[in-house]
Length: 365
Ligand code: MRU
Image (cartoon, rainbow, N blue to C red; front, top):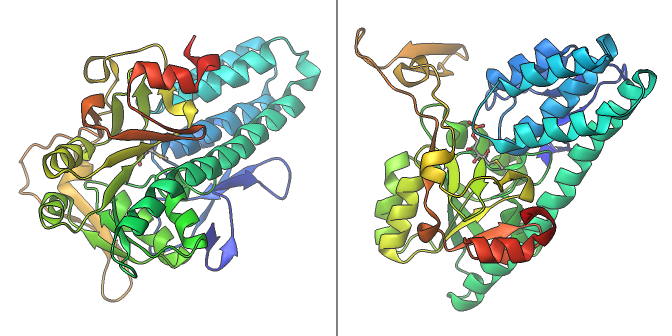
């Protein structure tokens, strides 16, 4: 996708062939800054501090983190230590575990002298596959948007509400929730996106708005609580969100506030779709509310906000009284019964065990 008019991925091999580079997403939308990952500690910090974030990108960064670690220490102990360190960065997105398991499995039976080369190749493959998967999600979701357009008034845009950033910045390219939107744009279907700001870290306001603007997609940023009102007034045709972990039964864990959007959509008869690569399905669990580990982050993210002042400085300010405690639950779970359908790289299916297993018989086990 485009940044400042140039086609880019979110993570790539550095020109020195030894480091890995990515956009520092804590700097968007006001600055475009590139981050260089030189050792496994850099990769772990980038994930934990959310300089890179979004389930598929977290997985790819962890894979590159293992590859970088193989530069320093190709022993089994070195591999185990890198995997352990990266696995401890963030608990909710299952792509992290998926990518680390894949890297460890690939490298375990390989002689130490070849581990570095093979690790980089495998990390590249994970990134390339994610691009193809997201593009396929776009094709599958495009049909839903096209059907809404065909049923609507000619010339009216299809109004899509999304939460957080399940855009190309959360993946390697295309995004998950945004892929059908970008495909619709390619097909000349008029779309308009309602962008939930997504407190506390404002991934909607800072990242989704940024990438839609770069891509020339019509959009409007709204406060997190506006979605229900818009749905009551017929201003949302479809919700499309991403997910960090989906159970085999179709429960969906995504950024905090997603559940409330699903409730509002259900109450107003608005279709609520979740776009996901199969790498975000956790086939080992069936009850999202009880089994998905929900990340709790620093209360500082709730009590403070960062933005640009009128004279161009980036400043962080307090927005709560000193001494008021804050809690920062980063994700919630939307039960499958509130999900109209799952948009995957193999097509759209119902959010239930039978349909997911039918689409992915090779993974369902
Ligand atoms: O905390 P974040 O910014 O990593 O959370 C990201 C999300 O919740 C996304 O919706 C999810 O990872 C899907 S990304 C295609």
